[in-house]
Length: 189
Image 1 (cartoon, rainbow, N blue to C red):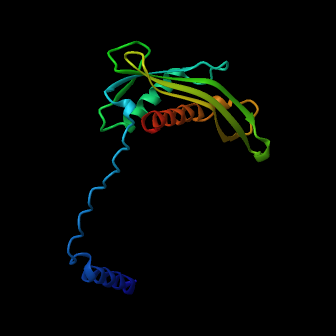
Image 2 (tube, rainbow, N blue to C red; image 1 turned 45 degrees about the vertical axis):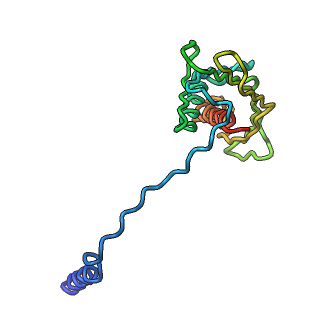
Image 3 (cartoon, rainbow, N blue to C red; image 1 turned 90 degrees about the vertical axis):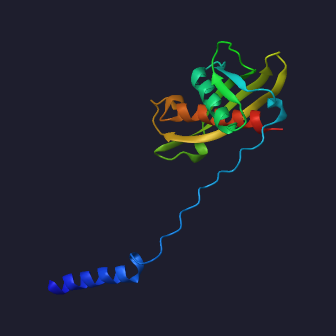
């Protein structure tokens, strides 16, 4: 036992002697520089505040319109930081420079049997959207119509679940759509 204690003390002294206490201090890490944001398109010139309106006008109405609008406004604020553009979600007119209107026109999901396992079922989704940016004079500054946004997602195989309300999907889908529309509106030529 005494031997093990002596070995432990010798190792600790060896570590200290070899530099743990006697080395010069390590240099301070330089602050990480984030990449500058992409330049916004000229259609955004003279627009400093934008009101975001979103609606699920499909027959099924699976997505929450308020949540869609808030996500889209948040994504615009994040992506356009540094450009003086501020977005807010509201159905009521304010003193905004422009209005960005986003609509989910059709949404559907079908099981994709090619990749089903015993515990997970893969679903194929198709979502048709449209978006427009109008200035305070009503002039269309940007227009986007997506015939179909296609993607797949896996869910637990359970016939009783509603996939549109399943485990975070009802939150991640509006975030995905908001991110996509904000990027197209700000940066797409």
